[in-house]
Image 1: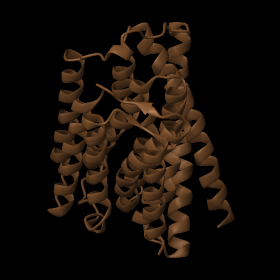
Image 2 (image 1 turned 45 degrees about the vertical axis):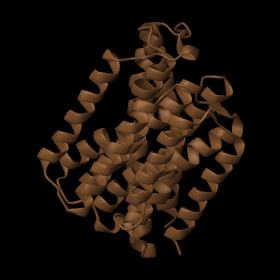
Image 3 (image 1 turned 180 degrees about the vertical axis):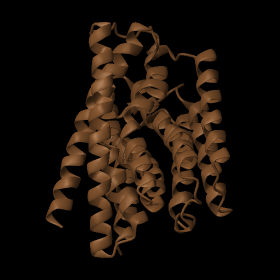
Length: 307
């Protein structure tokens, strides 16, 4: 048990460090390309901060633990929508006028696709490739229809040399792979020793741990007055979790998604995605009261997993 706990702690630390390196490198590369804050958050930072989830889910799938793999996908989206967005709003209320509505709608659609696949217990490599194809289509559409909001027109210049940015990105990936292996190995051992469902482990410990990079990136962006980057990171990461991580996991380990996610967690994934869309479509800002309510909902759901 002690070895497993240290493996989890070491894995979480490695994921946090690797995620930070990867985000810094990815943002620097995006700045060199002159990409807006919203698009950087959606496509670059959203993908980069999803790498811990991807590594953890693939490692779990390869180790024969689909409950951890798919629990991590669902739990990470719930953590993004409730924990990260809520904590970010508490740190610095987020102005949301005119940003991210179309992407939030894509997030709702991806959540419904995941729910349907689980409901009908569908699993095959072709479904995985189909999810990846949907992601490729989304990225192509986003690049061809940027629609930059007023507060996102001016990006910051790249502060890092191109070679250093590439090195940071590559180093971040390497540390993430190591951390993901430690985290999943320790979590599987604890789940088996304590008699806890692997899906619950994926929904809670691993999902929260692998969401640390998103929390750091969104909080820093909101504090620095970059609402597009903060929102883009959350929405983009949710899309990547389902289409990229889910697609890759399904392609590598084509088994049906655990049915136990259907009753509560996947409706919560879809519902929280719809809530983000509604906030972006009809709201002006995400304030501290809303942030507190989001955090309370996350805490209640997490407690429910161990009830």
